[in-house]
Amino acid sequence: MEPTLHCGPPAPVCLGDHPDQLLVERLQSDPSRGEIVVFKLAPEVMTMNSFDPSGKLVARVIGLPGDRWREQDGFIFINGEQLDEPYVHPDRRDHETFSGNTISHDNFLVLGDNRLIDFDSRSWGTVPRTNLVGRVIRIYRDP
Image 1 (cartoon, rainbow, N blue to C red):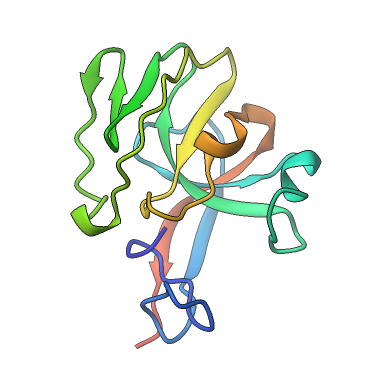
Image 2: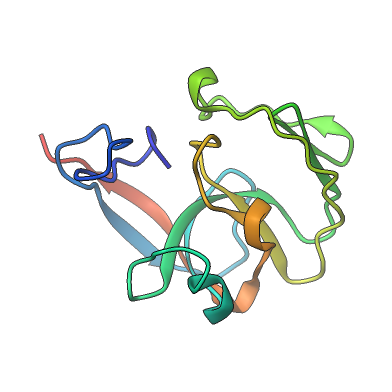
């Protein structure tokens, strides 16, 4: 999620000296496109990469249930329209193309803001509503 959220060292891609702390509000309703959410990964996904043992990850909601999505040359299209994503810096945008598909009922497409390296729905699929923990409502950054 760099540079929106700093992961802190020792990872070479982290911009901050310390990881950001997040205030997360439990979801009372479905998240909106563009919101940053915390969610639980499916157990089979956790074996694909090294994650926090809690199995929780943070990403941005890009696609909602029923949306048709695709990525073309690093740009996301929702229902045929290119998504405006000012939070993805040009030097962190990939140049991939995914045919995408329609997001099923009660599922969400979540992507990181650092598209070059983020491990997100493009790698393992959409997130079921039941796996969403909460929305990030505040980011605390160590001075």
